[in-house]
Length: 105
Ligand SMILES: [Zn+2]
Image 1 (cartoon, rainbow, N blue to C red):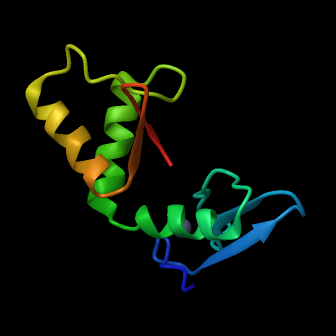
Image 2 (cartoon, protein in one colour; image 1 turned 180 degrees about the vertical axis):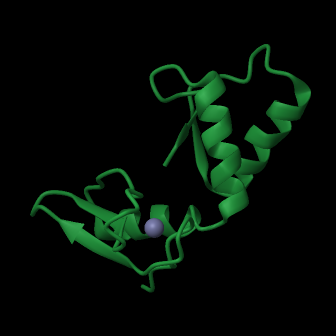
């Protein structure tokens, strides 16, 4: 499966593993973008490729900065505009939903 270029700098991406876990990172040494570590190679690749859209990434960063608690976001009490952003990111597969809380892949 092909890796999309880095959403921030456009450099190529590479898959790495430490025998137990897989992650994908940008090959540009000045750019510290990488996915979480995943048990399965395909999950790491999927997570990276889903984060390709720079607009979605910017929305995600902004929401995480303002609302995330322990890396998760609740939409309870959130302004409608931000709730729409959250919903869009969920629909685009950038965020997943578990027990009423959204979190990045
Ligand atoms: Zn990069």
